[in-house]
Length: 107
Image (tube, rainbow, N blue to C red):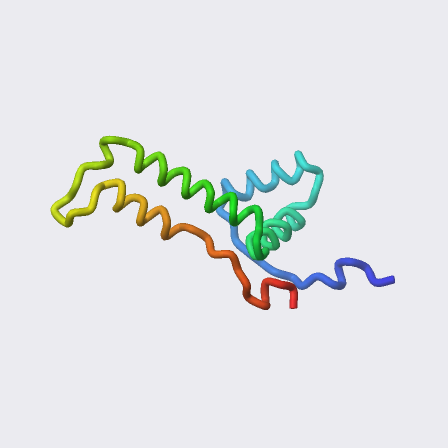
């Protein structure tokens, strides 16, 4: 029987001090290794039709709705665009694309 770690490839990443502390506390609280949390996060981020991606994008849409509904954001600039349009354009640039790439399907 092969040990599971023999199937894993080493990977190194850098975290700032705050991220490291938060990861360490989270993994201790959940009683899983920091490496497992990182692996799960990578897999979630790369997953096709991921709840992570759709949830993130829903958050962007809700933030845009809040901006659009605020009457103060309706002021218009000389370009003709409203403040809301400018902000929403920037928000939607942050939208994550669902990946259909073969590499993300585990092949």
